[in-house]
Length: 329
Image 1 (tube, one colour):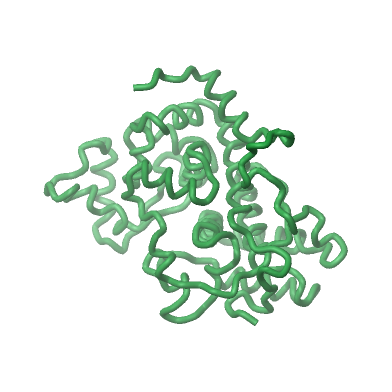
Image 2: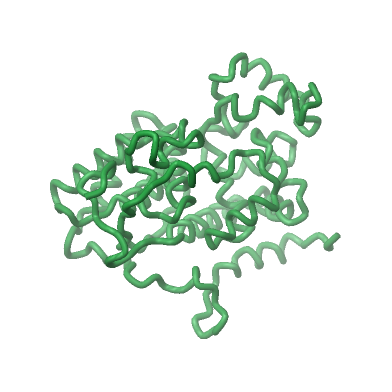
């Protein structure tokens, strides 16, 4: 087993992951500038784009703060299937990603369409749905307490979307090895994996998604032995039916903080994959570092979200700019 990393060393390692040395010949492709993306992409063609999005996101979350987690999740689902191309937004019954079983609890589609309509009124056929969703996720995270990060724009919308591809998304029961490999396929590191899972500090999950941990873990007819006893009792009372929902963070569910990682250290990870991160030698030290330093979590979450937003994007003539996010031109 590898020697445990000291906290100072791990902190330096985490920050160094995102230091880009431009002269290095072996710089990973996902750390290089993406041709066609630019922070000023809409400066002349739609200068109010970000202001419109920020205003609408703030109003939505003022009315219902739980949409913060939903919009971040919607963005992740988009980027995790063929890249950040707005394909999750296409509405093709029984065909597109939106209709995959893993997408059943996604929400925010109507809101994204409302944002698109508002921007279309100002800047017709200019701003892509992929860029809108990326900015919405950033602003939703910021409103609920995450740090603000700058984005490059210029993504184009994809023209295809297949539910079969969405079914490959993680469901909360995978091994850490499988998760690491899945995130690597998007150009994301184990540090990014653990950091992005920190979004579980807010939001909810259906009881159906973890019911096997409460009553019949791995076919044993018993609860998952790794669950904190008091937490198990609470969940069994809370989840009287599979249709019930419960918070992913049992201690501070309405605050965007690092309590999620502290919960893992107390065997209070709601999803099986959450708890596995704490006991795995590859991810456990990262969990420990983020649990001990909230500002480090904020920095790493923002950096990981930026990397996620660059995953397999379409630019220039590789895609289109939809008029409605739910339909191709």
